[in-house]
Amino acid sequence: MTVSFEEYAALARQLAEQRRAGEQHAAAESERRRDLHAAVDYLHQRLTAQGHRLDQLGRAIGIDQPPASPASGAGSASPAGASAGPGPGDGASDGAAGVSGRAGVGAYPQVPAGEARLALPTAVSPAGAGVPAQRAAAVDPVVELELARRMAEEADRHGQQAELLAQWPALLPTWSPLARAVAVYAGCGAAAGVIVLALVLASGVGLVDGFTLGAWICAGLPAVAFFGGYLVLGRWGRPAMVAGTPPRYLPLGFLICFLLVPMAYCAYLLLVRGLR
Image (cartoon, rainbow, N blue to C red; front, side, top):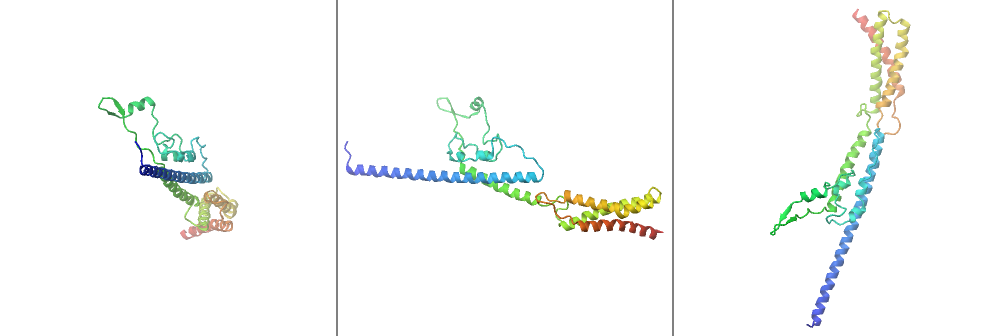
């Protein structure tokens, strides 16, 4: 059978078109793989930065971080996983569970080979032989990367909320440092004032002499109240994420404590005289 020149030219054009289509498909697939590599690299850097920031937050609040597991989230989000095609049985079947960074967590449960054969659904052929059912659709790496990106954004939002809370002290977090210091020193001075009243009552029954009572009222209890407020502000008035020590307003605290305790004693004397 002879082939005419026109038929030969048409066949050549068809082959050239198929070759160009194959080259375009290969170029598109290569571009898709490069995009996947870039997305995986960006996600890996983002997750690494999140891990470092979480370590800093943990150290700031005094929580020791557990040792890193051999199968980390960065390893599951490696470029090798993105370069693998979405075909069944390849290394990219971990999906979003592999991105989460927890060891031993995969997209599918591991079942022994014998149990897997027993658990596979079968379709009965006309000849009566059992044929394994068709496997589920393969995981799309683009979809998995999008899910991982959304999880990373959610983790960023929670991290920002944690950092905002870490910038507030445990004691009166919504108050200003000055108002917090005034409240703490006044509270310590009020507690010392209650002790003054107890000493006055003890002095009335002869358990405490006048010199001891005067020493405690003028110097002892005000000093105890001042140092107590100083320690409380240093322990519970300091935010976890703020470097250094916030101002404790020492002159103001000294003035409050050394005025409030004698004033409590004077108020007690005025009350006793008023009742008489």
